[in-house]
Image (cartoon, rainbow, N blue to C red; front, top):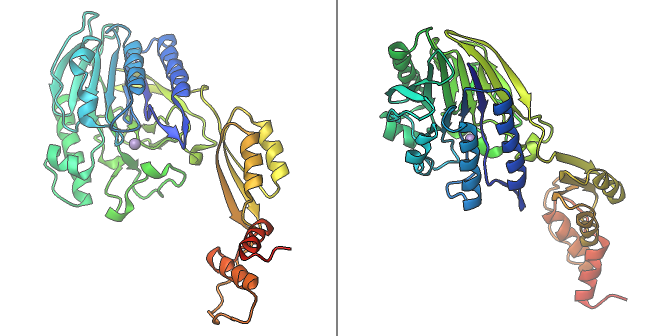
Amino acid sequence: MKILHTADWHIGKKLDNFSRLEEQRLVLNEICEIADQEEVDAVVVAGDLFDNFNPSSESTELLYSTLYRLSAHGSRAVIAIAGNHDSPERIEVPDALAKVCGIIFVGFPNAEIKPFQTQAGLEIVKSDKGFIEIKLPKSEIPLRILHTPYANEQRLKTFLGLEDSEENLRTHLQKHWQELAEKYLDDNGFNLLVTHLYVMKKGDPAPEEEPDEERPILHIGGAQAIYTENFPEQIHYIALGHLHRYHRVDKMPAPSVYSSSPLAYSFSEANQTKYVILLDAEAGKLNNYRAIELTKGKKLRRGKFDSIDEAIIWLQEHPEDLVELTIVSDNYLEAADKKRLTEAHAGLVQIIPQIKKIVEEGGSSGIDLTLSMESLFQEYFKSKNKGQEPSEGLLNVFREVLGTEE
Ligand SMILES: [Mn+2]
């Protein structure tokens, strides 16, 4: 049995003002082609299908048409769960139509999927809260899936009857999974758990380079973090979504893997290669899994220069990329320089001015009112801008305002 694991499509996501929809179209097409070439039996999309709760009609169309292609006319199981960016209600809306094609949407934790059968011979043979067993047309062995969409505390309270505290979240999910595992899982099938959560190996440091919005909420003590030791040992593979970097979190009790998002969605992901994961499975075990590199979409590139001319040369060397540029200088970045930079590159997302000089915060010695108006302005500007000197251009404007320009 072959299973494809992907996650964090974030359809409709923009990088600042830059739409990524065309790149998404290309990379999702690439994923469909991989599924066909590898003749996979099932596809698991581990959450954050859309980037926001109210996706545009273009985004919706792209999600549905992609999942439909992946379903191969109801012969391939496609299971898509909600992430923290998805509206769980909205994810489940097309359910009645989706099932005809073998597409299973899971919006809420603990959802119970009503059994169905497609004309191509795909069938849900068992179902419980948070669990399905699928009979696939081309596979002898059943595929069992424990499905847990993103669950914040609110959703967990509502759908799992959770009370407070972080320990409760972990123990509650552990107990929930354990009960399902004992009831339904043995080595006569392949057992997969799919979830959209922040998962770490207990004791490991938290990953640093992650998009801000996917970081765990630390002020509630990392309440969203689930430990790999919370997964039941009957599971053969844990398909994760949420963090955008490809990595295996742990190998015990089974490989728990973040597949990565298909595109780099923030500059913190600038140097990452993106993948989908192909599983080769049989009854009772995972033979192996392989990360297949995705090649479509723009590169995100970060550059840092202290000369505008050098920055422009570098920008012109990378015309196809989306770029974040840091300009190191003594002074405020002049409008004219900013203009030269933006005109040099169509994909310049952000210019970050970085001031070299950091003047130590001296004790406030009072204001010397005998100084000239211009000196007072310079002192004021420096005090408001971390010691940065006003540029000559700005001083000229100031002089003009004062009417003292020669
Ligand atoms: Mn997420």
